Image: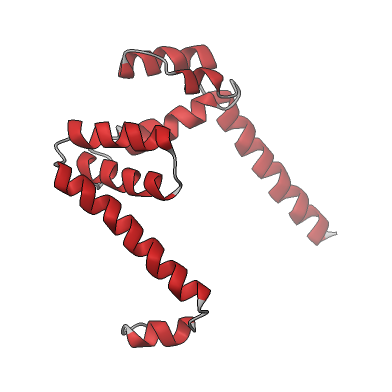
Length: 146
């Protein structure tokens, strides 16, 4: 009986927390207004996103990309990381936008080239390590890990 009650209590608490979060989330229309106030437009991909989830998607984007003072990475570094990931996915939309944002945030062509080359470098060695099934524990030991 205790186990059943504990499971019920955990489930009820989780549901109540999710409901409370859902109740506090802005509506899609409120979110679109905030996006437009921040970006000057509401990009098509936000309009196409499910209305039930657009507030969360914007909160993530805003927090990671525009969370000035609340994030630890410099905006230029964020764009270079984003570009490196976009090049590996590959996503032509992201590559275009992140290249533009990196330049707007002060990245040089050389920094952009290095970020993309680093993405290829990591992808190369990941392919080799995984494809040849190099033992992870041996690999860690070789580089001073535990």
